Image (cartoon, rainbow, N blue to C red; front, side, top):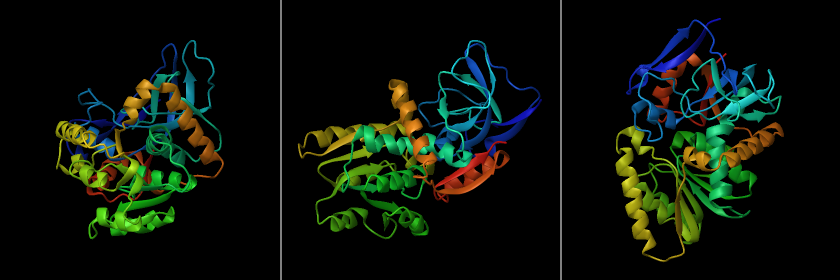
Length: 340
């Protein structure tokens, strides 16, 4: 039986993502399972990997990209216990998700309850787990706390908005004018970063105090401006660098810039703190915590408490077009790939 996957032929633009057919299904080795992938997520992290700028990926093309997936167990390898054929599972391999079938260590996957929408479920992995861990593991915010979310109309941004609403937070979100309805949909207050000074607006909204937390995925010069929005006792969480996708910055210079800012801020004891979050690094250090958090989000989704913003669900073959939209910043929420 044949199947299809997407291969990144070379680092570069979306045109490097090509659909390929494989004659035979992969066979699981000892301790592995074969998964029929139902959906795969897309996001700006995938575009950084495609460009060859993601520090966590050492592989060189050709390889199968795809940060996360949701699927169903299709076959068990020798010695696998605790899973069964037909059971729903998910994983975040960083690369390898843009495919119809794959084999993976049974120990890696997160079991999922039955009855989940596959497109919504895959949003729980990278996007919602990133948001959930920043809101609960990096700094636990109490009901009534305030926070500022950059790129609030994106996949992680909308996850922060929805989880923030569930936690009883007051959330401000920077976004282009065209994504303000999405921001309002989750009960947040939109800030038009193109036509407003978000620092002045945030301070004005909070009576000059600032917010308890800022979640900044823009990077570069934005970090120092975000720090000015943080109240005493608050925190700036840097978790990405969208400026990489525009070519304004490269990963080494961004990280070096952040650490220089961090050193300078620590010389000024003003009660504010900073943190840099990376979901891949955290999972490697705390694998049990990752599984627990994804499982908690699946439970919330199953209970109807979460409804991720999905712009579209498109066939796997259209992934290059999705990356073009991501490169232009024209995705509100998340676009999911249907791998069936």
